[in-house]
Length: 126
Image (cartoon, rainbow, N blue to C red; front, side):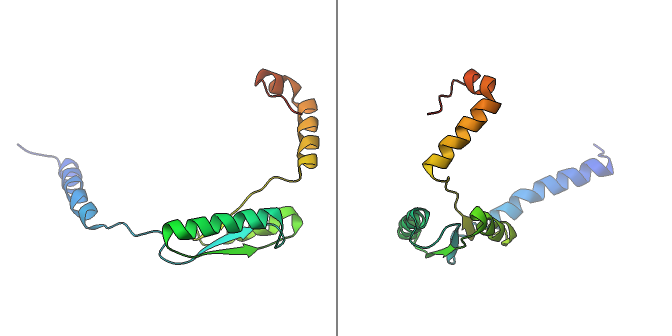
């Protein structure tokens, strides 16, 4: 049986993939310390929560998690630091909503703008 050249090359490439995959080993994560960037001042509620999360992850995964505070610009500095980090999974960011009073005002304003959508979704802002 004759195969066209392209068919033969596809079959040969497909047959070699399992051999390559068999030799590729998964790396353990994390193999070095992980940075957890918080957009709040040290000692604030988001900082305390991030430190508790970091401690729990460090105990479970056996690697240190470093909490780094980047306060300012309503969390934009922390978000920028996370966005500019090397995308290797060793820099993580946290996101915490604002004060409850600010959140309530936000929901009220959005309800006024998107009232029909909110009523359709059966959401009840307080």
